[in-house]
Amino acid sequence: LSPRRPFPNMEPEPEALPALRSSGVAKPSRSRQRLRHLRPWSVAATATITCFSEMDVDRHAGHGALRRRTDGAARGSYHGAHGALGDSSSSGSSRGATGSNGLRGLASAAGLSWLPWMNRAQRSVVPRHAEPAALDSCPPPVLYKQRWVQLAFLALLALLSDLVCFSVAATPGTWTKVFGQDPASLIDIFLFTNVFACFIEPFVIRNFGLRMPIVGAAMLMAVGCWLRSGIPFLDGGLPGYTTVVIGTMLVAVAQPFFQCTPPLLSATWFAPDERALSTAVAINFNQVGIATAFLAGGAFGGSEAGLKDYFVIITIASTVVAAASLLFFQEKPPTPPSASELEKLLEKEAGGALKQETTEGEQKQGPGDTFLEEAKRLLATPGFIPPLLAFVTSIAVTNVVGAFMDLKLQRAGFSDQMEVDLAGAGFEVAIVIGGILLGGLVDRNKQYKSVTLWCLAATLLGVLALGMESLPRSFALVALLAIGSFAGPVQPINAELAVEVTYPCDENAIEAVQQLCGNLVSALLVPICEWAADNKVTIPGMDGYLRGDTILLLAILIAVAIYFSTFSAPLRRTEVDQGNCVTADGEMAPRPRGPRAESKDS
Image 1 (tube, rainbow, N blue to C red):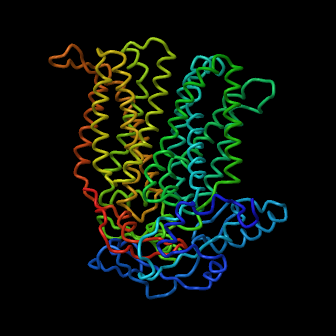
Image 2 (cartoon, rainbow, N blue to C red):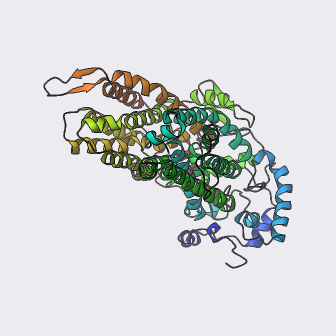
Image 3 (tube, rainbow, N blue to C red):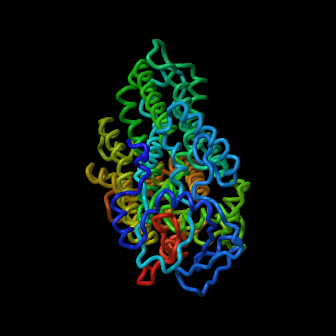
């Protein structure tokens, strides 16, 4: 590693440089970057967005028309200040700068200057607006390979958190023998603690940024795992039940910081044609943790000693990931990946309060807003309810199918428990793969509505097929995998759709509302479906019947699909991205005129 490039992942990707040079936008020199800190920059607003305060927006100026602020007060850098564990929020930038400089001095003296957060300020670029004549064509976004490191950390942390949650689900006999408790009660404690933590998480993220809460939650999860397993490699059994419960609750408090931040991470680090894929990986990777819990739990959980080893492995993995996140997880890239992200950051740096259009008129977003205030504002935003219902339906269907999967497969002829476990693991993996494939599709065509409707229709057929118990085993397995492949992607796709229609609202708060509603509906729907499963309805003209739980899921899917088909809100964030360019040195300029895809999803 050369002294000038201590962390190569923070350099732009090589494939972006030729296009940048050909567009007439060269990468700025370091001296130019330093001089730019002395120059003022102004805030631009697109004609299609009316969410920012102190902005004069001409609705009839056409797409991509930029109007400059007249107060000339906006000055600052894209990064702002860095806190102890990374960048602080914009509201505390001056406070964080002092602590950051002190920490950098101490770390440099200790020989830790290679750490990524030690050198980010030297590469910081102050975003400003280029003149319209500066660009002949729109350059590709400047992206950094570090974004994949960020995504990997969030995905691994989500995997480990659900691995802890369901670690004893596959070994109920051993758990009951060791502790004399029902393992389902431990899972219930985890889930209820998780719901309460969802109310706290948005406030923490909004006031402390992305890096500090994620790293802190990773460490909290590691501490919880140590309490659950005891000290590794020492003789002795598992800790007492109370200690295990406390450790489980700590992991449950940490999990919302991995569940609710994927859209925020995608907006901060990924290009507009990568965001749905990134969100799909981060949101759905917890399903891999559930699959691992059933496979590894069955392999290790046959005895108390095996259960101890199982918990120790989880503890070591969580500790390694937490330590690595402390060293390598970062707050934000040197330059924003999209015009929409730059627009938000410019207004925040200028000290303006973001405004959001609701059915009650424009409402300001403040750093002191409570979660309930944010949720109320989101629910009043036109176009937010359809993606919320689709997201909740996806969680509810996958949770109900997962809860009754053993019974469904046994009725279809699966008698070996290992076959059932493998089928369940396949179901969870199908959710992840489906999200990646369909998320990538939506990134390219922006057809959130049509893709969601097709997914709901395919899920409907899968639920119907799985509920027909007279069908062959192979047909039941295909139906199960189809549910996972098409119901799972509805979550990340509609998480991104909700961000689109509520722009510039906080992405993290949006996901927190969706996750909270999805978990609450699932908690209510599972016992209702359990009661309804005792009722059978004969299928006319066929040798078979449907149980009440299948009929209930079919009714929910049909109702949500019909309501979702009425969605016709504009994709506000895409309108900003399609109307403007971000240059190589973090400037914003109007996109050159030419044919452009319609940004309204109809």
